Image (cartoon, rainbow, N blue to C red):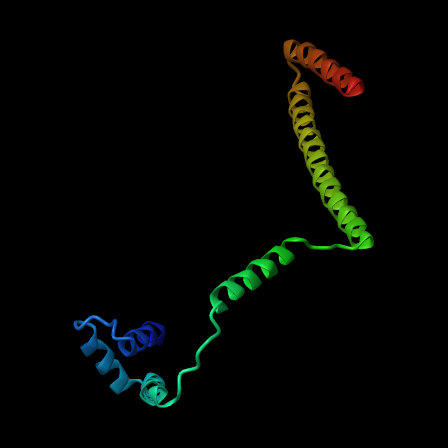
Length: 153
């Protein structure tokens, strides 16, 4: 059951903000859900007994003092002190992660190139093994070019 929605409705009911069309839905749910029924009864008890207590009067500039306190605490939270050793460790881990990523990219590209050249050599050697003189001369030239490229790279 989605009780969260009904708990919000209970709160709105007690604040006299619940739409009249939603009231039957809330009452129906309270009948079938023991958890929401219990919460409704507790909230209703609190609501009915609350006016019995005397209201506490706050000092005159309470609002401004509260806002100042909140503002000061927010400003203090903005500065985060990280000790020098922690900063160094964080920088080392960052460097290690970046280095590992770059190394992975380089090794992956090298492996892909190697696989491509191996496939070309296999293809060339298969055709070379046929006894056709034209193909033999052409693929001798192709293998020589590929070998020269590999030696240069």
